[in-house]
Length: 209
Image (cartoon, rainbow, N blue to C red):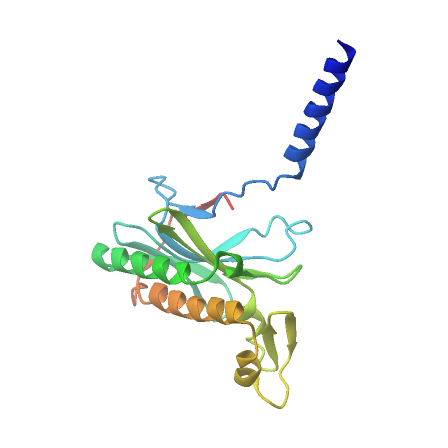
């Protein structure tokens, strides 16, 4: 009886240890319409750095698009304030963009779809694919607003005499695939933003992530 009890304790301990080591499941970040509760099919947002010390910052929305053609996007004013606008496009264009962006993300190996720098913000594109949500996340655009910097596999570094483009040619195939897919997905998404819109009275809320 003692041996059986000891074996049971050992098995239970191992099971608990495995549970403790298993990675937590992270739900995808989606943007939900404040009135209908329906999630956007496609979105681009920005996540602030260091959530531990500044959790109140949270994500900020750049563009979110719904299946019915509703588009909510952020526009920066002259003094730096951000305003959310709402407009519409043809639902057929949304469906085509969702398919195109999902297919483009799937060309990037799953282990190469995120490029983040510790304690720094990053941008994220999320799309609802046929088999679930797909995401690209990268910090490269924020850093490269400074023309003297370039984002490479191993981190952010100064642009040398070769120039940014030449330095990026030496990056890994996976990282170059991420950057290329990011540029295509962003272009496809931003093409859905109407030229004008009305103020968004009820901003979408972020869920998950």
